[in-house]
Amino acid sequence: MEYPYSDKFDPPAPVIRITLISPVDVNNIFSHSAQLDTGADMTTIPQSVIDSLELMPARDIIAISYDNSVSIRLTYYVNVRIGEFKFYPLEILSSPGKDFLVGRDILNQWIITLDGRSQILKIKK
Image (cartoon, rainbow, N blue to C red; front, side):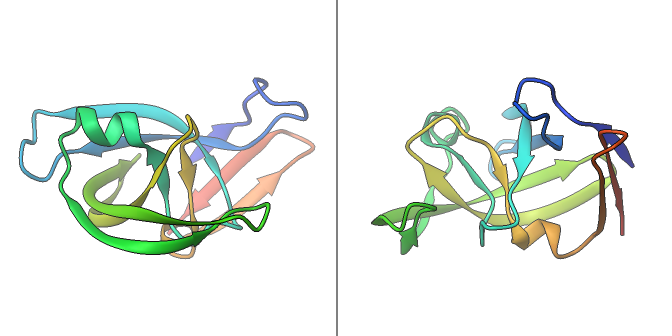
């Protein structure tokens, strides 16, 4: 799979389309672009999307942010589709912000090439 970088970032950044599906209601679906974040242990989605999908909390974890701030955050299970790849179910982290981040829980399952010159993200299993 190949994805163009997003020019909504400066400099442009690799993004992919992520589809989130409620494990209890397969008709409750949300799709959005997400940044790849090799520094994130877990895939992270906004709490507002978690609420709209009516996901049930799984557990509390201690989360350390990029700025070393520490917080206790809830995790949730959700079904995730990215292109032809399925991650059913995936434990994700809630975010108080608006960022959608694909973490190493997914990224480590792929071979990823960031072609910055061509601004193309290439993914293969």
